[in-house]
Image 1 (cartoon, rainbow, N blue to C red):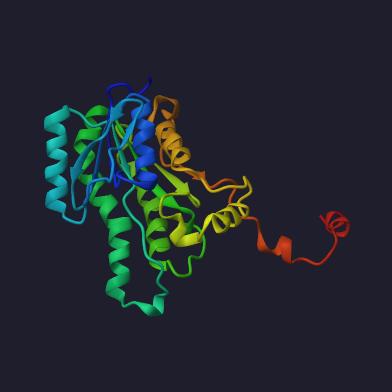
Image 2 (cartoon, rainbow, N blue to C red):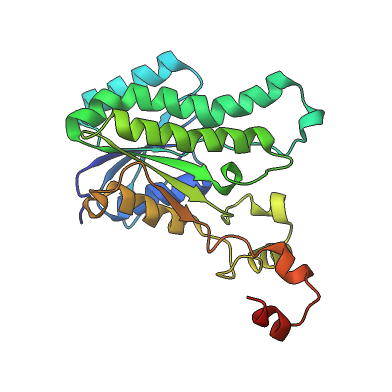
Length: 259
């Protein structure tokens, strides 16, 4: 396995997308550490390999620095950092004050910066890589999650700047995610019929699975992507079908004739 023995840290790796990423690295032979404020409901494991859990509040810079110092002491190296922790509740801009929206920006932009800086020396020593977990919300309007979208847009730019400043020792890339099916999908899309209906709007006909994201993260962290840095890889099943195509009243023959 290409990543056999490599050390990987996945923030927010105890459930959902983060757990899917952690399992993909375990499957490829890596030693994985997942960190979050609360322990997972069940061990994050794959094919007999199990991730190590470390309790950590990523909003505390001193705690983050101490965590990476402990990683260095325990493993002697760090090869991959996946900045996955993040998220937001649905909240229209006018329904929250600036401080509340700023906390969303902090979690989704400032925290990955803090974590990356704390991990930098270990990553540089191993000529490792950083994988940011971005979102299509950073590239299109995001009503109800505007602060989140703004933070994810900033995260992509941050990754590109890091890729230039930290080269050639550390590669930095972003996975730009669309909709992913997790244990919390019902909160966003409803029951199974609702999830299926939302999935049908994606060109590939379904929501992503956490394992889909994990395989893409492993690719970016592996030697197969040795010349990929400062890139944004879209993992969104083809994106969104343009609304005007379904709204248009002209028939297909007329439309084709005008193309």
